[in-house]
Every structure is written in structure tokens, then in C-alpha cells.
Image (cartoon, rainbow, N blue to C red; front, side, top):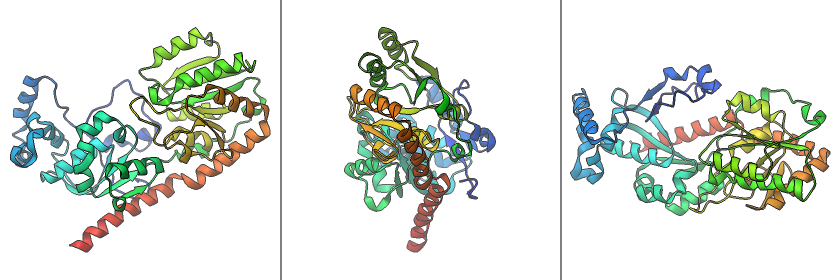
Amino acid sequence: MIDAGVEVQIFSYYRPDPSQKLQPQFKAYNLQERVRYGVPLPVNRVKKYTNFVRHINHKRLSFFNSLNFFKFGKEVLNLRYFYRALLFADYNEFDIIHCHFGPIGHDIVQLRSMGLLKGKVVTSFHGYDFQNRDILDEFRQYKQLFKNGDGFIANSNFTYKSLVALGCSPIKLIVIPVSSSSKVFDFQASNVRESAKVFKILTIARLEEVKGIEYAIGGMHLLQQKFNFGNFTYNIIGSGSLENKLKELVDKLELSNKIHFLGSKTQDEVFKFLLDTNVFLLTSVTTNAGAAEAQGLALLEAQAAGVPVVASRTGGVPDSLIDGETGILVPEKDVDAIASAIIKLYNDPTTSGEMGARGRTFVKENFDQEALCTKMISFYNKLLKANSARS
């Protein structure tokens, strides 16, 4: 957006963990100068109301709108919207307010109805926000958001159908996937894959239930036990709540010499791993709560790097590759199919290389960052023109 000449301001409810790694783009675009951080709602009741008294003297008396019980109901009594409004205390008029994730869209639509914000509200849905039952219950299936929001963006056809089923009007909804970074195309293809003596498998994912990492580990176990194939190494980039449990499983299966947990990496570090990988593996599953992978961005980055992919046929994943052309889709939780797909690619390096080349073309033609940015800006302009026509 910045490269396209759009004036961009970023608003975040919370400050990031200081230990988090800063992505190269954050530094390159000097984004810290564009970010404004909010005042978190204190858990402690005394502190919450003490801070409220301190901030209530702000010059913008319209903050009182966020406390209008008669108009907005009991939700205002816990000061949620008052604290959200503080984020926009000095800057509150925009052409477009683009919210990432449904709950934030809900908040912003409410703040606008309170007279605290001006601008068209666009909300992008990414995954948990339209699948988590507790979230859906909390925000009443997004009825107010779908009614009062101006535009909605789905990151895949799976997400699009899910949002329509929830009640989002197709007239307001468009599919614009999250793009892979175009920077991956700047890296020259490595010949390491052809010359390496060890077959390298890679996963980049949060270590959470929806990513199904335990089934990937099961697939590695079958490579040794059923296919008698031990000439591989499996690297897992990412962190999450299941890390210790997954490490215990690796130890139990005596695979600690084959499977390596590498933790979080910057995007540049990820690209280097991708260029030294034979197969990218994403074994996502539908969770017990009904959540599924909405898109699978890592699959795009892997294909952009020329790596053939093996992935579960779940959620929006099929939108992110061409089965049999740029990778192989396998049934959810099917460790035998996972292992078989990997062996197939190992035994046929010619087909594997062709899949990688086609994957690179597929991503460039369908998920180019500049093209998707142009589509996004066109969507913005459509909403702004509709407003001008009405006025």
C-alpha cells in the first residue's frame, strides 16, 4: 500500500512483546513511525476505573458517547469501548478503516456508530475469527458487523462460503487472498536440493492443534518403519502451546535425530530454509471445535521458492496449490498418505522438480503482491464511489 502511494496509518490495541523478532519489512518501511498503540483495558477493576478518570479529561468530550448505556446496552459498562476509543483520541477521520479479524471489525463499527470514528469500515477474516464458537457467540455471529460494515474480504473460497453461511451479504464480500512476499522471487534458486545427500522436509507453522503437526511426525515415523527410508531430516519452524507435547512424541518415537524444532524465524531466515528444502509439508486438520485452515500462506511461500508441497485436503488449503501439478493433497490425519507422498517425490526427482517450477509460476500468476494490492485498492475505491453516489 505504501509503495502504491496510499497514506497508511497502523493502529494496534497492544504493544508487541519486546522479545518478538522484527520482520525486515517493519524496519525497511520504518513502520514504527506509522504505528499508534492503544491503552489496554486493565483486568484490575480499581486500576480500570482509576485510569478511566485520568483519561476522561481528554479534550475530546465525545468519549462520553462510548458510555451511552441507553443506546448501546450493557456492553459499554465494562469500559471496553472507552478504552478502544482512546486508540483514536487524536486521529479519527479516514477514507478506509481496514480491520484485520472479525472482532476488531465489530469494535470499529461500534465506535463509528458512537460518533468516534469516520470512514468506510472494511474487515478481513483470516481463520479463527469465523470458526471459533466462543468468538462467534461473544460477537453474536457478527450480526451487527455484517449489517453495518461496508465491505468484507475473505482470504479463500472456503472463507467466502463460511462467511456467507454466517449471514454476510455476498454483495459486500470479495475474495482477496493474503499474498506471499514478492521478496522470495528475488532469491536465486539453489542447487543444494539436487546435490544434498539428505532429503530435507520442512514445515512452517504455529504449533497448535489446527496445524496437525503430530500427523506429520507420524508420517516421519512411517518413513522409517514401513518404507525403510531413513535418509531424511524434518525441520519445523514455529512455536506454540503444543511444542512440549510434540517434542515428547518425537522422543517417544525415537526420532530426535531426524526431527528438529527450530523455533520462530524471521522471513529472511525462512526463505533461506525454503531454498534448502526438498519438500514442504503442511498437515493441517479440522479441530475438535470445527476450526480449519483458512488459506495456508506458508504453502504459497514454499511454492514461490520452487519447492513441491504436500498438504492436507482441508479448509481453504486446496485454493493454495494445484493438486498433482504443484504438490500433492492428502486426506486429513492420514499418516500413511503423508509418508507415501513424500516417498513418491523422493523416488521421482524429475517430477518433483517440475512441480516446484510449476508452483513458482502458479504463485506468481495468482498471488502476486502488487496485483492483489491493486485489487484491494480497487475495492476501496468502489466503496468510496458508492458513498459519493449516495451523497
